[in-house]
Image 1 (cartoon, rainbow, N blue to C red):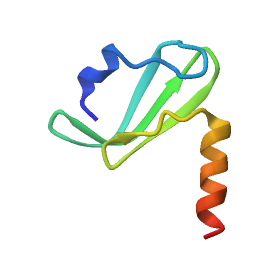
Image 2: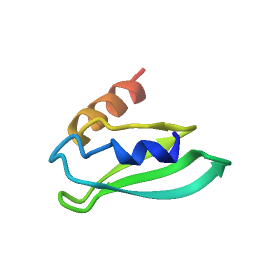
Image 3: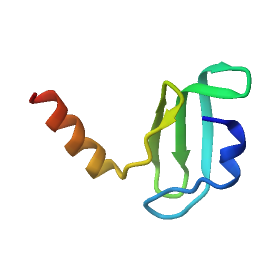
Length: 69
């Protein structure tokens, strides 16, 4: 994920501003980290450069489905 995407990204739940936390990056690319919405206290993971902006309920359902296969 490029850092400049922060200008256009918003929380999918409440449309609030997101804060970026980086745990691994390569130049301008954020490879691992998280996006956090302070307004509704939801974290969205970034893994291998891809932010997962699914609402928490949908993310849990997908993770449960993946674990069962």
